[in-house]
Amino acid sequence: MSALRLAGVTAGYDGGTVLHDVHLDCPEGTVTCMIGPNGAGKSTVLRVITGLLGADAGRVTLGGTDLGALPPEGVLRAGVAMVPQSQALFPHMTVRENVLMGGYLIRRDRALVKARYAAVADLIPIVAARAGDPAGNLSGGQRRMVEVARCLMLEPRVLLFDEPSVGLDPRSLAAVTGLIERLHADGRTLLLVEQNVRLGLRLATHAVVMESGRVLMHGPAEEIAGHPQIADLYLGGRAAVPAGQASEAAERRDDG
Amino acid sequence: MQFLQAVIIGLLIGGVYALMASGLTLIFGVLRVINIAHGALLVLAATMTWLLWRETGVDPILAAVATTPVMLGLGWLIHRGVITRLPQGSPAMTVLATFGLALIIEGVLNVTVGNIFRSATPDYFAQSFRVGGLALPKPHVYGFAAAVVVLGGLYLVLTRTWTGRAIRATAQNPAGAALVGVSGAGTAALAFAIGTATTGVGGSVLSVLYPFYPASHYDWIARLLGIIVLGGLGSLPGALVGAVVLGLAETLTATYGSLQWSTLVFYIVIMVVLLVRPQGLFGTRLREDALA
Image (cartoon, rainbow over all chains, first blue to last red; front, side):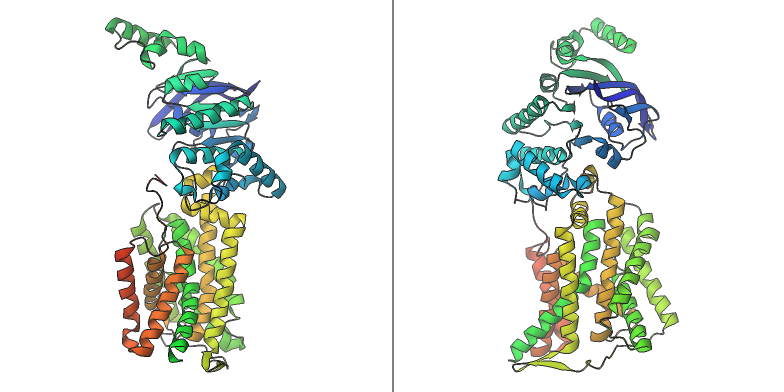
């Protein structure tokens, strides 16, 4: 069953249209990775889903519920949370307070907030280990773990990750990818945007390739990873693409 | 004994200064707006208190119960009518606009109640509590008590309630606060209104402790800005410490030096502190990438 679905979404800013007729389907319990060069519209897709940017046409639905008319807070309430690329924590608040703030929308139910916090601290050990420290004094990798912990306070149906690997050293990266794998194993639905295509495709069950605001390809992650064009463009399959093949690839892209 | 007397008076005055500066630093922390009109709002509240006291005979400090809701509403209106209409992230514009607002308030007071010195003088005005060999002026003690109530309440709200945590979260990372469902616009309006509401109590205390006239807001805003710069802009504990330093510096200089030098000493302290700690006493230093 489909959890998150974009159907024919067209969206953009004052300067012009960025997304053209984008279709995206994230089945329940899957990890979808969106790949594509800078400017392909991946972050814009996330902005449309989270309600920061309204779609000019098309529908965004979560389990059949239309998200299009909702403000960002409504989307969050409906069950879509995001771990952004840039710093999202409150640096002068403690790790504990930061994670608790994730439960802001369920603040009326104190028992629920308490129970969720306990569950999150159990899943992500850094939360308990550094509970009393200011979040601003954590390392980049630790902060990303706390950001995920904060999102989990709402038990979102879909979790969005914008470039989870960016700026992390190998050990922190291993911790974050381990957490993503764990979330998948727990049956959560994830949508990643990832510049590190090899990593993204390894974590994902499904993949979407975007270019110039259009979906170029979509399918199971292994299939995309094995596609010759993807191997060429993103995985360094060949050092250089001969001129003839490159134009051929461009033509095929236009068909897609 | 003279020293102890001076220190205690300095602490009492420091508490009152902290009350007056708390709203200014709260507003800066959440909205990044330096509200130059804060001093004028204090003088406005003091004038309202004075009128209430003269017309009804009500205790001027207790009159804060009536003036505080008025200032809360006025704060909300100023935020709605002035602050939200300014370009985002332009400190220069907020300084200019709120300075204009201060001039308007000063002008309106000049026209309506006149450009003369006033002071509320309830019957305890010149009385003191005698403790040991010390004389504690009653207005200072009551003013300090009012400050403790307001600052304590503010502290509890900011640390123990979801609303307070939302205010602090917005101050520290507006984008992050939006991600967890905190309304930035609503929080900013609330912080501005609460910050302005503190001038209700602050103005009441001012009306008893200090003679004032419409243009005295220049003296007050200079002092209050000094306090929050010394403490670290946006930090409430910092404002408290900055205020106590100012209170002690003024009182001790007046006791052992001369009255003329008492305010200057405070600004010398500010300069020295800023040379050593440019972020102010309580502006915490975090890893430089904390909010990159």
